[in-house]
Length: 381
Image (cartoon, rainbow, N blue to C red; front, side, top):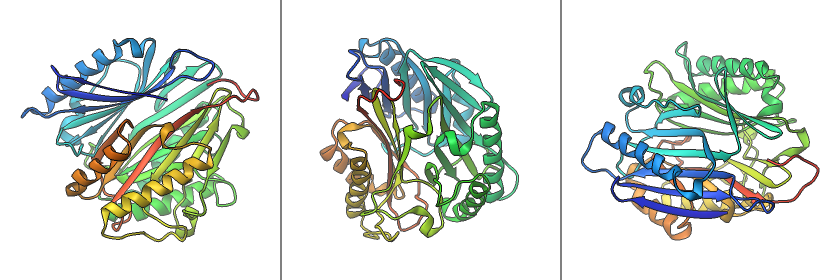
């Protein structure tokens, strides 16, 4: 993994990125980039314009030769007013959620890019076709009917129908979900119940498997929407390419405390291994919150848990291509950001204000990791 960063002084935008090239390739073909806007006593529209200019200049760099943006996620400070201003004309999947960047900006971005990919608009999202595989991004969906549980059921039903239109299924193809929840302390419990019942009806149980996921505080732009769903699915693989990571010495199965997601999911290709780590907090192997009230110790335990999941896939933090860090209390940002800079100076990371699904959890992180392998049983990525 190659890590780089650049500061566009004239724009006031800093960019961190990871670039992955398999052992069989000399040029990278997979990138993650996070863009940070430095506030200049300006409003949202000037910050957004600076971000757009920075993205254009970034993609013009030789390091991004041949790269196509597959998915963008914008983190907004006020989605109701800002989301209508955030539109893109290219074919990439576009996700937008109110999770204010903790560096004081009104907007930040995470970009996922690939080389040699064809983007195809599909119902509910965008399919990225590359060689043997299709990667379907179902992005930013909301419902306005009923409570958070009813909205969750409706969103999942729509997603299952979308997958069916691609000859795919929730159990066989979906690798990752994000549930952004308005007032997570109130609305998460009905979501959990609805998801559990829906998954059971789809054949997802403790005896089979669940899906890597983050359930986190986040404000959809529509004020009647209590839940916003985004998801990622893979098509063209065989079941043996996908398995789940547990790290039982550090973490317990989520179903033991009534929720239904996998701690992490690994995907094996001929030339690389992907690991998708779900939202992970300071929890022990009994499902108990560790170090309540102490964000520094919670951060260190969170790192231990994530590292244990990565190690189970023969990977480590040096393979992490990007990370999102969620903080319940914005006042904790200076301490946590300093801790991350000290331990992970090169990791592309975004810090946003978003309460975790249990009030006692002060911090949570998710990440994606990539490592080179050689496995001729499967097609290359």
